[in-house]
Length: 160
Image (cartoon, rainbow, N blue to C red; front, side, top):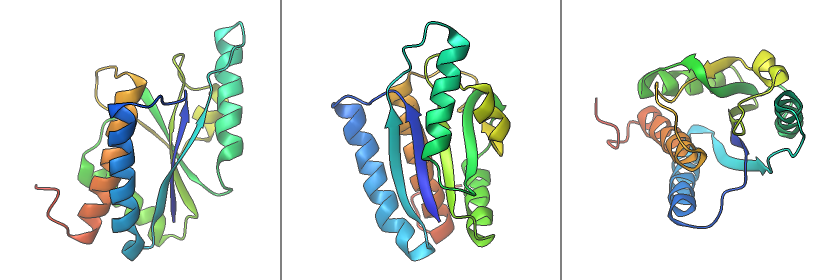
């Protein structure tokens, strides 16, 4: 199963980008034995449309077009559900075992996700009650993907 982080907003070079790349590399190496590839990061520039709804709709359209057919879509959303790392690993494992071709975690732009993406999402997930800058949200998502892989493989990175 392919793992994808779909993001609105281009990450600039710096320590945040380096940390995301480190978790991405670890996940790619550890995930192979579990039949997981990626995470691939697909990013788009923020829309320049005048209205908030138009921006969100354009961004949602870009993200959805970039995802493989049949993807399990997780929208990162402030109104989503907060779950444990173990529960996230179980979701990843279940999708993989059901033959899902891809699992995509989608980060919206500054205005959030468009209605089409939220409607198509299989799950809405929050990274806690606090609001995080986009760069930190990418780090958190990348780390949790790696953590889920280590949980599934029995690696001692995660301690319960």
